Image (cartoon, rainbow, N blue to C red; front, side, top):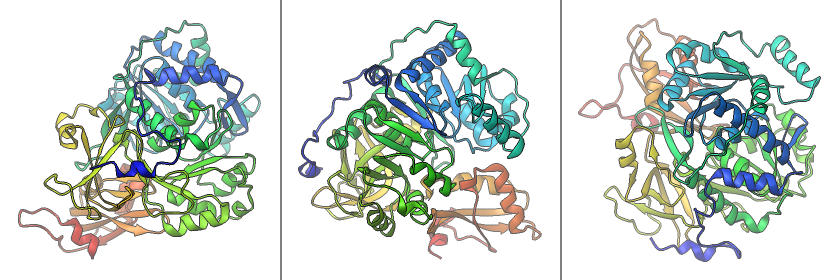
Length: 551
């Protein structure tokens, strides 16, 4: 379709960006650590590291990886929440010319095994709190090295010792584990300091990330995001909000986990480019502690999902914070609810801008312009160098205002799914990525998501796919048939509901939920269970999930 949205671009926002302006993320990193050397790059638990220190730490980390025989392009997994160790590992891996494989720390052994096996990860950086999960499947995966770290490892002594002691022995947050081929995170840095770092030649087509996303088949797929994909999206985001930014002066609240593509790109990478200070929040679910942390900083930007903003608004003390420096509040990952956006604006004085993206698009596709003063209910307009169109089931564009599937084209669209050419060909045709989301567009080029074509369930911004849930539940010996659907929920957007036909009448709800907890990450565990004598099906025996949702 014609790029009607270009007329709505604020002054100073270019219509196109050059995705090859930087050869790689490594080049952007090197430029930033040189330009902002004395500025604070990341802060966590009242400890800061400057861009200069980040340069030195990541050089050591990269040198260690190269020194143990890992090669350019080798996948290295990272499994931890927002801690100072994360950016050190992330940029260390990238500077070594290797590929980052982000892993949700809450994954079960089954999920972790699939991701490590599918990605062929050579090493993993893992928080000790989750090492017991890796222990369960260590013999089933091929890892050359396991780098373990404690929560306090990047803190100064004696705070480091105290935090690690409390976490392990007082709060009992580190289950016992036994792993081979391990080395402590700080020992990695010490060893790396003794080795020489060789800067690899990293090109745009080289893989930067293997970012895993669910699929309609129930199998988690690795989206291959190249350096060019990521550089393009950084340039698109920064071009879109550049007029609102001040080099080296932005303070960014990063409460969403960095292993999630939204925070990874919009917070960690985008603001590193402009010398921003990232405040890493390790546990945003502890709202009182989160708000106490917010009170320490003159923050200018915060990103989050609807549930995060809603949680802050309903926690005592939030309304008393100083919002005078806040420029941008960016909502994504799930739909921002009007009531939350309007309340946010009333309390903070800043509009909550909603955007839209997908893992496969690095991730940002559209966003509301920064000069929007109030919530629009839309996901905004396409970023520079991004094309969008809405089509019917035959691939024909639909009339303006009519719903259809949203297709995206641009330099941020992934190279494909790792090892799944058929899935890639199905998802990307003639450069157009089929999002699976149903949307409309108005005469000004503002898009709105109206429904999901796929049966995907969105829980607090995370994709949950029914087939994966059904596969796990169906493996229970007392289950005959099962269907999983999403049910609207005020706090998380949606929750998972399963409708089950019993094989053994003794099966109880608690038994089934406990079984799911053993095999699924917490946000995927069904919150509602309904038992029925039979499930609605098509003539060929396919279960009709839509009928169950509509009941």
